[in-house]
Image (cartoon, rainbow, N blue to C red):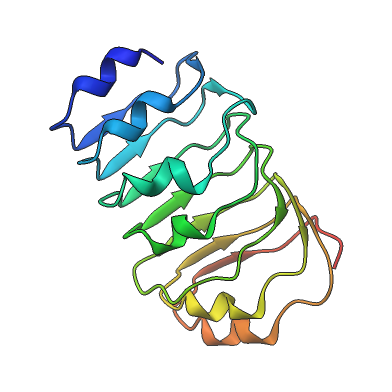
Length: 165
């Protein structure tokens, strides 16, 4: 991704989906006014991890789609503290446990399918109480499905298939 993007300080929406970009997303960190970032279907790889530091300066981000890349690392809790309405990270190589979810009344769409997420779904998933779409299919999640899912009363779509429950 061109490092020259870092000078576009007033940029609010960035659509780079369906290209052949690869490497680091480092230049994105300086785009502090972004509300929408669509970088799905590229070749960003595991050398770049979606850690807390990546999201520190993106405090206005509402839509983030980085699906169908090769992004690795663990899913940081920081991403659930942003005003995101849509978080789509399906078909990457995220690993580890799902974080303990903070109270979040903004997030509506969460897709983490087809990654390498492990362990149980935290019972505090109920803190994402305005979710309408939840897709955790195609991971290595185990344990039992938390009874607290019943508190996600706005949920219209739920997929937990292809796990190890």
